Image 1 (cartoon, one colour):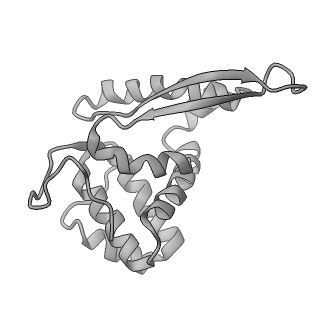
Image 2 (cartoon, rainbow, N blue to C red):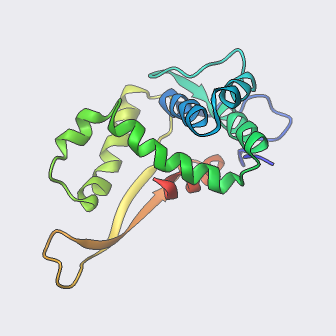
Length: 175
């Protein structure tokens, strides 16, 4: 079991696709917090000699190896593990690297936050041009009846940035 990048052939060691290292760092912390430090060490060994760096860029295949190792260790379906990681990610960035961004949205609604995701990812891409960030947009905004103008139903669209990341949609769903 595990997560395989769809744009890579199994025989390839590296796909050359890049992901923001902060995601790797958060995944390692998620595994340590939910499965224990021994499991996190086993998962980290799957990508040795690499390690997560907060602002660096790492190959996507390393993330898939860590997720695959966590699935093997925990015997948790990959979709469930990724949804849990998505929930963990929101708290991780809220209290860490993107706390200033979240503070700038003070008083904002969930709709405001979701409408800001695309701009946030474009900013990261300017800082790290070697990554291909996902795209987000909101559609079908409807005020909910009897709730005032601040509560809406809406659809958040996610495009992974490339075919190999389609499997990460469960991560986004968890967030």
